[in-house]
Image (cartoon, rainbow, N blue to C red; front, side):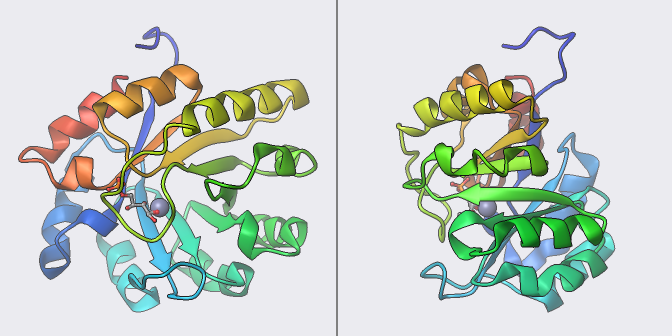
Length: 222
Ligand code: DX5
Ligand code: ZN
């Protein structure tokens, strides 16, 4: 548990685990809750072996969600969609390191569009690849499962990876936040926060619960 004087852990519930037949009910819950952001997972069936939702759905969600939008693009060439993500009024645009051959340029484009820029790493990508970009990003999103599906088992090695990322951030004086995504629950969340995580994404742990708001509060208090 963090000292109360420090900022509380941020929580970004992932809409992927919501009821797609009644999204407005789940978004009303998010709006009422203590959630900090809403995490939106876009998949293209190419970068990851699954397809989720695209801009028509995102636009509808953006119209009724009062929380800042944390958009996670699991797609090839994500920079191509910067203007469309901006038009949603998104707060954070996360692009995968593995999908961006010109990552520095993509980060610049996101910033020019007025959004915060997040870089996402797949489980196999070492944090060392961020050495020359860490000062330019607002957040690093570490995948703690392989991207593409909700409800997967947390990859244990991620704890050590968070510690290494935290030390890279401290050494370089970067202000980047650390966000994690995949297999987050009360138990993995506690260990991740102890290792240095600032923002927890949680899909099934929040939306699969009888009382999702209670789960959000639990994660925030870690
Ligand atoms: C997976 C997505 C996650 C997913 C997490 O590719 O990026 O955001 O919704 O789901 P849980 O929390 O159920 O592992
Ligand atoms: Zn995600």
